[in-house]
Image (cartoon, rainbow, N blue to C red; front, side):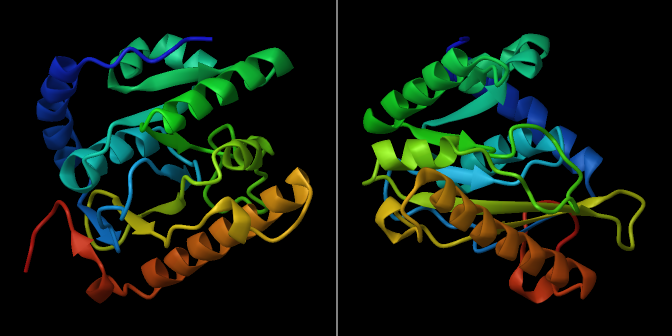
Length: 224
């Protein structure tokens, strides 16, 4: 397992590179209810449909949340983009059960030591319209072992509207705890989490289609 190797100086330098890159790449980054979590640490849970997801988490964290974040990332991807280690990424190899457990235990240690963890329970990038999302039970395992850490759902939706470049719409949901998740077995609780994330993603899609920008804050792009 590849552990994170955060370097604050690298984070600062990377922010100077990333912010202009996002502004060049997207017409707008629109966020709804993107607020500082009421506690620290937290477990961020998100759908995963783009290579940009992790970078947008970094962007939003530096802009709003300001947490000491760490992100679970597929081992192949982390080997290809090794610099993510210095931003807090650590690996998971889903083809080996022992490696999966090692990564979950590492994430658990991070949460219990006060670090915030970002998890994509789909495990891989899938088209944003794919349903069901297909969450792995690792999310329920992690919440079971860290019951006092709130989970916060974050949804990403990418779309073209009236600009040459695409937009990304982001919605932050309300925090919830392990004891609040319906179900008894780990698989049932995973299903409940997946259902809640799916409902939030579908709601976000509806707002994108109806162009309901009034409830969203512009993080980049032209401000009227």
